[in-house]
Image (cartoon, rainbow, N blue to C red):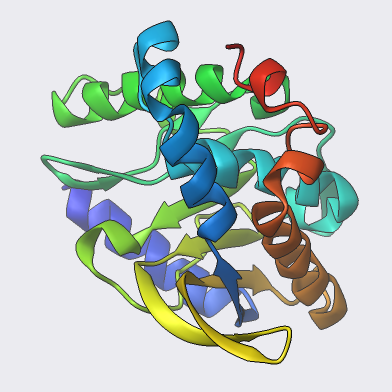
Length: 231
C-alpha cells in the first residue's frame, strides 16, 4: 500500500509539473578539513558526529532566503511562499525511502541539525516515524551518494517545488589557479518546477549553495568556527 501511494505521487509529479534539473559541482576540501580538525571535539561535546548534512542544510536555508521562489509551492492558481524553512531530509527506512522534516531549520545550530536528523533517522529505521513528521516540508534534500550514486535527477517531493540531490564524493583532478590538483568533488543536482522557478533562479540557487560549501567559515559560520560549532 505504501509503495502504491508513493507510485501515485511520483507519477503525478511527472504529469503535473514542468520538471527540469540543473547541475553543478562542489569542492568538498574546506568541509573535509573542518571535519577533520573538529569532529572529535564536536562529538565529545554534542554526542553526535559532525556530518555533511548540517553544512548542506545550512547552505540550503541560506540559498532559500536568497531565492524565495524555490521555497514556495503552487496551490491551484496561487503561489504560496513561506518565511520559514522546514527541510525534508530523505532517509532510508525498512519500507523504503522516507522524508522526515527538520522543522524551522533556520533556527538550528550545526549540532541542533545533526541531533534532529539522527533522531528522525532512528525513528524511520525503527518504523516509528509518523505521517506528521513527514509532512509539511518546504524543500527536500536527498543524498544518493550514500548508496554510491555519482549523478542523478531527483524527483520533486510534492507539493514542494524543488529538491536538492547530493551524490558521492570522488577525488578528481581540477584546475586551481592554473595548476592541476586533486580534490574531493561532489556533483549536485537541483530538480525544480519550471512553472514558478526560472532557469536563472535555479542556477543562482545552486551556485549559492556551492559558494557556501566551498567557503563554509565565511558563509556559514560568520568567521567563527568555535562559536558556530558551540565548542
